[in-house]
Image (cartoon, rainbow, N blue to C red):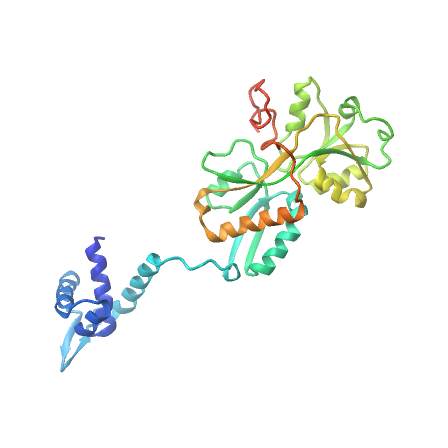
Length: 328
């Protein structure tokens, strides 16, 4: 549609609303002759007189009556698209967000996120869903809005921001036979392990570090949930290497002992990840800020030089690549 068509649409709306050339001209700030010229062009374009004289006034034709509401709505929509955006008010936001998280994130931040949203944006709803290997694709294709996790290679266009950091510790039940002496690397690899694998993939950072040392471990149970792993280790002789923050949260409840891992494992960072299509969306910025505030309130401290992904080729590790990175 040409720009002249759009200007004619505004003139047509004024003519249909006012039913008078003079009044329509005043409505849009044109002279009466200019509006008469616009009416002539509209009549030619539509093949209909639009306004016909009746006594001292003018009447709309049946075609004009049929167009009146449609044209008015179209003009208002076009005007609203060009108007400055209204200031964002969280309390007026009514929207559902889909967020990829683990139960670790929900355990640490879920209650605070919920409290902030109830206080500031009570009509916002969140559907939490598990992390997947396709988080980036779902964010790109609008299947979800935000993801929280540790990622390897993300598409270059993705946006991210560090949310919180954590480090690994080992967890066993309080009366575990391995306690009472120095927990060695030999004991570490000799015990059966529980692995937390939120995305269902075997292996990972710990196995990569062991392999660098020519060692391996036996993963007796792999589970997708952190809390399930903690519950399972409480009733068995399994060893669990897990994030310290959630281990401390449940240690007393489940009767667990936290010990330092004999492996040198660097701390890591969890990040917020989103697609650039929502980078400037005020509602999405508000949601990201809620998660960031919840993290500051809940965990506070930060670990130095955390890894940004959990494999030995992490560029933040300072290590040279010693082997091709396995598909994850």
